[in-house]
Length: 78
Image: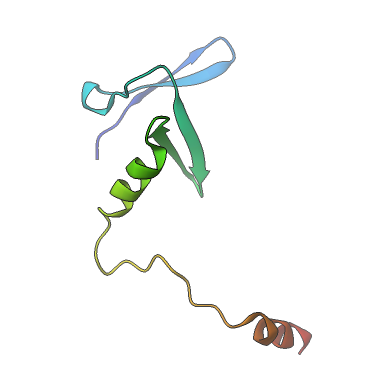
């Protein structure tokens, strides 16, 4: 896994990305997912997200199976 340098400018923290990770434009979308921080290009955010999701291993479960809402409520009352 590659790394990027962190630095402080004023009261903000910034990330210096390696050349191969540079974005076009002057801003990106940012999202916290658990402990990870995800950066997406503003121009094609959904395309970039779906492209990234397609790179996960085929066996990865992206959907959780949950009981129907009524079943969950009954379980909580017990």
